[in-house]
Each structure stands twice: as structure tokens, then as C-alpha cells.
Length: 501
Image 1: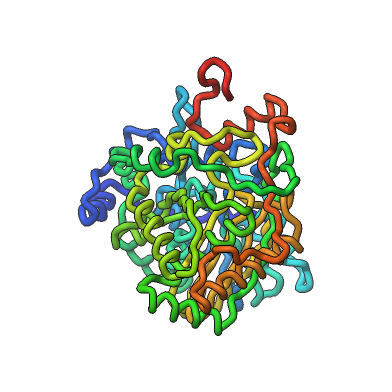
Image 2: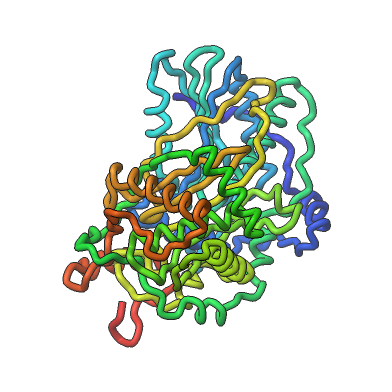
């Protein structure tokens, strides 16, 4: 394995003049880069702390892999990644604690997004290489937090994987970087000038601006007061420490069901997202036996057109509480769930770690203090075939070996189809159980859109138990509880009222 470090240094892309040019369109104050290091954004603090637990591994690393056909110029590709680091300064970020404050500084862009290149035999197990590379943790203090690896199996057969830590990127950042990468690579191969970057705000300026905007503490205290953890009457108990080991179960919704969702949404004056979210709530209520549940929904904070090209963790997580069941009128339930989501979305300026503290949830080292599940929806038009320059590229799945929460449902609506994936903690669920979850969710969604029935009493004939919260008798020892609690609630005091962890 060799690493390409002997690449020419591209011209700087985040000079003060360039920053002023792009920020004028955004009307954001420009932070003096010479005044750094700077306080990390709340979302960066959250991902930093979650990553400090030994068991976290690579759970908070985003991965994307592509099979590329044709002759790849590895040297030009390495220089293209160096250009990306100059263009998007967030990729150069490094994090450390100074005087009890997490700060972010920036490393030399020339080495901030390295490409390593390996040659494999034509019959080598590329998937095994992807899985191994994907599982390697990242050092948030030393970096790099943006990495690329190219495997060459034959002169015209390659696989490229990009890895980005969540402190410096979100899923949307992958699309932005790929768009830039293919243009830069094509220019370098042709010995043409590198295209100028799109006018967009730098993440550092966006984050510092968001830090001084108001939050909505009163709303979150009121909405989440007394919210329970997701539980079940079953006798299952959780392990003392969740190790973040995970897996994924993938499935697609049938064409007839996708059409029925669209028709139901049109009739009810809502979106397919709202229909699927309501079905998720029904699924959790039915599986847990609870009427009152809290789940989470990630939301983008790319609120303006210019932020559409900003690389960085521009996201927050909403805690969505639904405390009643639907009866006969499924449309009314969908609208109610959607209204609750929209209201929460309007208060998304409060970082999720602050929301958790405001809600004052029951403390347990055995589960997340506010929610244990997540619903994620991505809607995008059918995209044109990908390419790296003029070389055809095809997305390739990376075997998932980590899980951030107990259970996450990811839905991607693209073109005329909806693909789904359950990400689950393997210390809590086995593959057969999660396959049954997929069947139950699909059946519940079908009932909702075809009979317009809400959750009511329509529970699975054989309800599958979600793991219940640990009882006081099975609580872990204090050192383990402290480690887990520090991970889950980064801003919480370690000791309250003289003795409550």
C-alpha cells in the first residue's frame, strides 16, 4: 500500500478575499481566521463526545464507495482530493479540548484529504477490503478526518471509497464533494484550469452564526416533559454497555404500495414523507405497546440556496413525541404526526444535546436518555449516471458493522421507488427479528394507505419485543454508568443534588 503525498499544492481556495466574495451573497459575518482556534459547533461537540467512547469505533464515520471503469490517473486523483481540502476548509478540521472547551483548528490543506492506493489481484475480495477500511476509527485530534482509498484490480477496474467523520460532514456533503471531485479530476487530467468553486458560505462562518441565534427552550421543556423511554412488557433486558456493533437489513417497497402512498398523500394533502413517518410511529407504538413514544428525525439545516453547496455537518436531530393513538381516520393521524413534526422543525434551532438536557429524562446507562430510534427520509429525483471525469462510476454498498442507535429506519425515495434499510444494534436484535420488523412495518404502512386505518388495535399477531429498559437491579456498576452517561449527555453535570448520576 502506498500513499500519494508528492502532489503539487493547488491554489488556496479559502483566502479571505474568496471568503468575503461568497459570504456577501449569504450576508453572514466573516470570522477572522487568524483569531482561531474556534469553539466547535454544538453538533460537532455531540459527535466528538460520542466518538470518545472506546466501543464507538467508526460508528460516526460516513462512507461512500464507487466502482470505476477505465484507466484512472491515481496521481491526478490525489491532486483532486488535495484541491477539495483547499476548497472546503472544514475538511482540514482538527479537534481538541482546551480549558474545558472543545475547539476546532485547521491543519495544512495539502495533507488534509489523503488518497491511499492499493493494487489487488483481479479476483480479490474487494468487499472485504471495503469492510476492513470502513471499520478503522479516526483520530479527531490528529486527523485526517477526510480520507480516500483507491483499490486497483486491473488497469480498467477500480473501487474508490471516501470516508468523512461526522464532525466535518453530513450525507449531503458526499454529493457536493463528488460533484466537485469529478470536475476537478477532469480538468487535471486534461491539463485544463480547475473550475472555480460555487459561491457558498464556509461552514465555520455558518456554525459561528448559528451559535448566536436564539433557541426554543420553553417549547422543548413543555413538549418533552415526562416523556418515557421506549419500553415493552417483555422480559428482555439490555446489556450493560452497548458496543455500537450493528448490521443492516435492506428491503424495497413494492410498486403498488409506493403508488398507494402517493395517492393517499395526495388525497390527504400531505407528503409521502408524512405518510411513512406516521407509519413508523404506528410501528413503534404497536411493537412497544406504548401510546406515548419519542422517536428522532434528522433534519437538514441547509436553509438557503447558497448553503446547498456548503460541506459540513449542517444537520440537527429532532425529538418527535406522539402521545396518542390513531383510531379509524388514518389521514387525520398522518396530519397530526406531520403537524407535530413541522412544529418541532420550526424549533430546530436548539441543538439536540441541549434538548436532551431540557427534557430532564430518566437517567439510565442502559439506553439513550430521550430516544432510542430514528426515522430518516431522503427524497431525490432520479439522477443521471455518475462519472469520474469521463469514466463511468457506480455506487457500491459498504457492509455496515456499526449502529448509532437501537433501531434506525432509513428510507430513500428516488425516481418511482422507495428503498428501505433497518440499521440495528446486534447486541439487541438478531437478523430474523429485524426481517420481521421489515414485514411488520410494510404491512402496517399498507394498512394505513389502503384502509385509512390508524394504529388502533391493529397490532401484529405475534408482537416482536423491543428490548426493555434495564431495571435498577440490573444496572451496571458506577464506572460503566458514568462512561455511558458521559457519552449520551455531553453537557449534563456529572453529579446533581449531591448524588444523582
